[in-house]
Each structure stands twice: as C-alpha cells, then as structure tokens.
Image 1 (cartoon, rainbow, N blue to C red):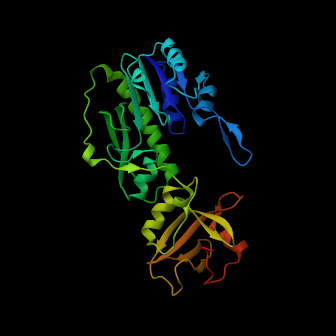
Image 2 (image 1 turned 90 degrees about the vertical axis):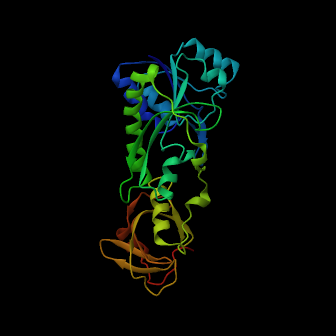
Image 3 (image 1 turned 180 degrees about the vertical axis):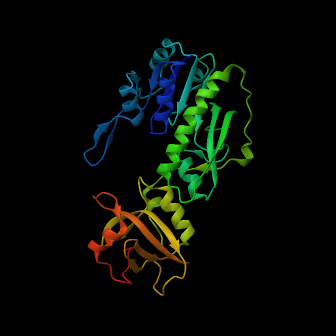
Length: 310
C-alpha cells in the first residue's frame, strides 16, 4: 500500500519505524511541521519525526500550510492509497482527507471519546485513570471525533510516569496500525458516542507548578504526568526545582504544607502536604541534570521546617 505518513512528535516515530521495517508498504511521502525556533537562542529545530524520517532515508515535506493549493498538488502527485497521521499538529481539509482511495486516518493515544485533544497521555494520568490505550479513527472535520476503526486498551502501571506510558502507547500504536492496514478494505467503522467525550488541554507553565496545600494523590498524579519532561516544579531559594518522582508517606509532621519535614538517608527528603508527607525521590535543579533527591539534599543542606515553595 502507498502511504503518506504525517506526524511531528516522538509518538509518531515508532509507528513510522515499524511501517518501514515491515516492508509490506511503501512510504511515498512523510509530512511534518516546518522547523521552528527553540530555546533561548531561538535556533531553528526540525520536528523529532523529521529527524527520524531522514535517518530512515525518507524525504520529508514540511509545508507551512498543508492545505494550500501548492501542498495539495505535491501531495496528490505522490498518488497515496491512504494518509496516516499521528500527532501531526495540523488540520487536514476535506480535499486532502478524500484524496486517497482509503481516505485519511489518525492514531490517537487514548480510548476515544475520552481525552480528545493535544495531551491525552498526560490527561489520563492526571485523571487517575487505570486504563488507557490507542484509537485509530477516520479523520473528519471535528477534532478526534471520527468513527473508530480499531481500539486497544493498555493498563497504566502503578506509579508510571508520562515518559514510560508514552513510549508503551507509541509501540502499541505501531503494531495496531500494521494490523489495521491488512484489514482496511473491510474494516467496520464504529461511531463515537460524543456525549461521553472528555478533552485534554495544551500544557502551560502554570500547570507545572506544584501546590503543596493539595492532597498527596493529586500532587503525585501531577508529578507523574509531567515527568520526565517538562517536569512539575516548585521554587526553592528563588530557583526552579523540578520534582521527577515521589511517593506518599502517612503521618504528616507538624510543619505547614510546603515545608521540608525530614531528610531520609539514601532515600530523599520529605515535604509536608495537606494530608501526608511527600517523599521526593529524584529532582532536577535549574540548569542541571536529573539526580537522586538524597544526593541533592546533601548539597542543599535542608533545615527541617524550611519552606521549599518560595
């Protein structure tokens, strides 16, 4: 089958790699977003998928507007049988969706109609879900609302963070797509129940800031949802301190929420929250690499009762 594959983020990479490795299909074009300025120096950087596709020896088309007449002409000249998108980050017009014989489909890391939108993996962790998965659906005008072609669940492991869950979902999606492409001419479409839809949002800096007046369970979900990148954080001695992993301990000390209550040898340090102690296991200081929280505490020389959220 002649495939145009469109994506941008790391989620799309294992899917593209599996398509190439299978040798069952021909990737006639890879679509991605144009290079954007990143970092303090605003250096232009290609998308992760662009870099991965080039390493695979594939040419990449990165139009500013994928729906422009010029882009549509170039895409149609590839004569695709199907367009497959995965975290592409752009709307496909009706003309583009209906161009290939088998239309355009999308891989989405949630059990739709749950967690539609830009950050479904983080949203599942923040919601306290114990089950997530991947959905492959036909693209329509509405975001993540097309009929389901295939869906598979995946259990969220205890204490699993975003990075781990993201990678497991991407690998699952890759295998699902290979299976679906073998069945695509005869696949049964199932309409989504839009009344059950929930939505995830774009992540902002405010979402990453930890509020230690909240219960431990909510804080742990927040830490897991943003680890390892971009990292939930607090302010300590005027600088950002990311908390990358933690666990809850019972019997909170008498300190106020947000205060360091103890340093536990070879384990880390604890922070009082509204209903428990948060044992911090790993951290990342501003401009530094991630490190063990116990090792960090030795350099920081914490004092019991010292506030960490200032």
